[in-house]
Amino acid sequence: MTVFQEFWATLLGGLKPLGFAILAGCLVNTPASAQESQPPSNITEAGYALESDAADRIILAGRLRTLTQQVAAAACAYTSGVAVEESHEVLATATAQFDAIIVALRDGDEALHILAPETDGRILRDIQFLEEEWKLVHAAIDSVLGNQNDTEGAHFIDDHNMRLLELTEKLTADVTNLHSRDNDMAAADALMVEIASRQLMLSQQMAKNACEIWTDYHAGDARTALGASVQSFDVALNALHDGLAAAGLPAAPTPEITAYLRILDRKSTRL
Image 1 (cartoon, helix red, strand yellow):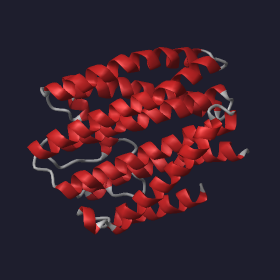
Image 2 (cartoon, rainbow, N blue to C red):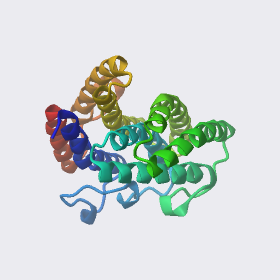
Image 3 (cartoon, one colour):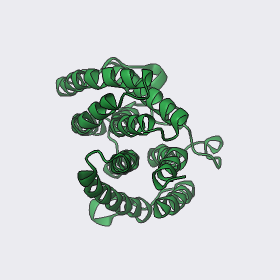
């Protein structure tokens, strides 16, 4: 197994579910049945106790950020022959999730606990701009899924992923500012969700950067970006574990989250 193949396998196998475990525990005390040794596989399994859908909107918007990097990483891995079956599945699943989340944030989706359509004009404009860019990337993804040798399509996805990330960052900020304020979410909770959500995005960004280096596509910029992502990941991981008093962020609020963070720290050190 090459260094990149091991890197990609570690990200696929460990960081994502642990990140969701952090998100699931940031806002509520989950029922005992939800606090098993395995973290929830997706956000709809987290068992939220909040009556509003503010947390779900914020987490879903943040999830879009992660998906912008995940589709680029998976397309790169798939067209490079790395973990072909897994990469194809990740790319297809991430694309379907992106489609579903955009619709849910705009129109509502009870299955994702988005209880009503969005009414804020700024957020609706964010979604419109994001959809326009996503349609371009979606077409390239469909082409790659149908043809493993479509490196041109993978490069198109890679070239557009940072614009997608920029648009999802704007959407996430606006969703967080509006819905955390309107639903009286504690500032510390909103900050913890933001940091944990960004960790998920950084994990996929690191995978994308590593694949760019492996395939020698924008390799120089990718090396710089990978170093910055690793540093940001480590700083945020420490903040989630120990807290950040200056920003009003408490230490990890439950033993389960502390345990997951320790596992994540070991995996990130290995990477």
